[in-house]
Length: 308
Image 1 (cartoon, rainbow, N blue to C red):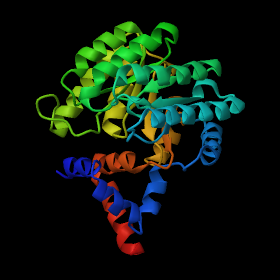
Image 2: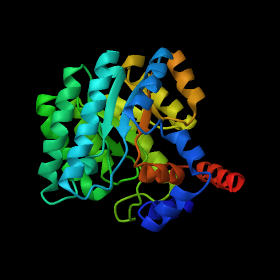
Image 3: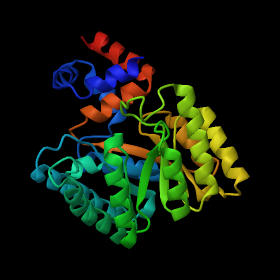
């Protein structure tokens, strides 16, 4: 299995230097990363809106080692929100944040992350949009869910992400669906031990379907994060069975992957949101995209060979 090997490489400084220096890297990174700056990503947001698509924006970067870096991450999102204000897209352009960027792994990290993310959520609400808290590895989730619960006291539209490969997620889904919150379901893209997570794709997919059913039958707003045609079709059927209208849930896919499917789902009347990452610290995000789909790794390898 290549996935675990690539995920291990995502934490290697040596591999980071090698991949960053490889001649074909930029071509592949540009496929998944919308740009390095707000100036580069704003036209992409406008183009998506013109096509009937929605976006969630992620300022990439997770290797935070100081409180100053965490504050810089907060300020990067505040700058993004200021630029989105002029577009007046409301919830059609929301944000996704990883609490590791806001200092979650530092000393007193839970309190630090909450203090840094709160002004971002507040500023997003002020322009009529919202924030979704991304899920990271299983050791961070209790803190993430606690911060999510705290933020929802003042900003109930704040979303969160759950991962089908974790054993705990069905219970999390039941709790969150009953709470009426916005919940994105994904398979999961971190290397997790067999003690906490399914290791086989078939088991992960089965769990994904069970969790999607829980969300569809609940009181919340499900966000279906998948590129898998079979899982998308199943989610559509579960939505119909649960009596949901097309605007009572949404699909989410990554920027640069299956772009034709983005357009098709939007044309059918579904809410279709494109997860759009940008920024200079792209390595960890990029490596997880390679781990998720071997075809991406083959594409990267061909690029290196043809550019070398």
